[in-house]
Image 1: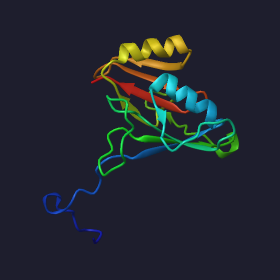
Image 2: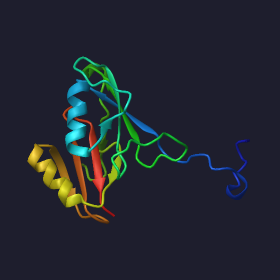
Image 3: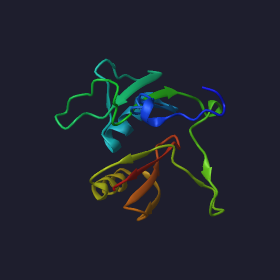
Image 4: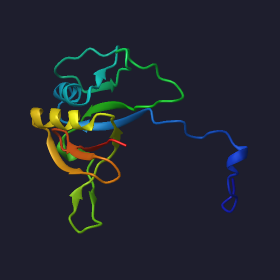
Length: 155
């Protein structure tokens, strides 16, 4: 496609049909698995042996029946690929400077139908909550133990 050519939406196939995974750098994969299980409900893929010292893991959200999703062309909730990374290798961090506050900004936003339950779980589990807002529906911004920032929104 040339620089000046516009894609004709009605004449092309779907280019993007979902997000399959988000790569997340963490300092301790084993501990992070436990954190993501306890706080967000993510579970290790059926192929994962969860043990101390592991350097990578794939986590998924089970469906309503408790079954792990089968990867396909339409992925509703992305898997998390946890990778061991030291501080020098970096974390997923950036700031939002629209109001001159330089607050940490989320790298992704999840959706939930039960945000109050989630907020209560986070508070009970000592999750670092950065902010709670009521913009276009309840929203909470929080960080995992490595400082990776996420959001959850209830439409």
